[in-house]
Length: 425
Image: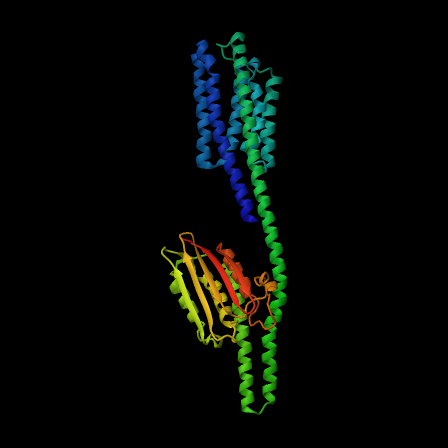
């Protein structure tokens, strides 16, 4: 949420900076056009004021570059007010230059940070105060230009009215454009907020389930070990004591596995994605070797065939979580009633992704469980040997790296897991 607000403020600041630049260029062109009557009427002495205006507009850009948009906006508005104030008095009421004060007020939201209320009030009152002074003193604050007679003043008035009708649409366009950008940013922020709320609701629900299930699953092995310790204290038979020790070891291994699942779940959400080069054939061969000493692995034939002709990069930590879960399940839930048991891993590597299928002829998964096996703490049967976190972590991990998984299974025949992982090269 904080990043969204910062992005919004940054975009708004950038838009105001652009608006100042657009207005400086536009005013330069407008003021240049306003001096054309001077040239036409031969009032060459007045061209010095054109150079003063050019200097003022240039100073706005320089201040923006070296001191920032905020200072530049203040100087732009103050300088514009003072310039209009001076020329309105020096040329006269009929020049219609004082109408530009109302244009200045319209410009305030497009160049100034409107969250600074005192500055907005100041820059709104300033042009109103200056036009009031002009009206009360009948536009006689500064000496009139000696060359300008009523005839010339009327010509300037008509030219300035034409320029005003050109300036106003441009100012309105800049305002509309600014507010459109702000509105679009607000819509994007709202979408982000909705997504964050959805994620938060999901997280809260998962947290409730997590706390309940973790407390139960952590206590179960501990309670079992404590019970075995109490029985062992009363037992005299050495063989029975060995049996109890084996049961304790089994409970502690289950606890260790569960804690490992929790750590994987936590790390997946916190650790940054680190792409590393992978040779899938070698990588999966190494992974399967970790399971060959499991009691369930006896007499299971493992076949691995991954075609790869391109360099592939993926997060090895996360891909390890994914394939460890599926391969370990393939071993653990093999069908001991079958004479020939197998695990086949095959796939193709493409420039954009790798597609891998893991097939086994184990006990399979009932159809009603297949849509739920990726839910947190879901166990497909009471005989489940895991924590119910493994496949959930697998799905969350794949989502983290923009991959996906699909399962097809039939009870008594085995399971197929389809996995796609994008190339992070």
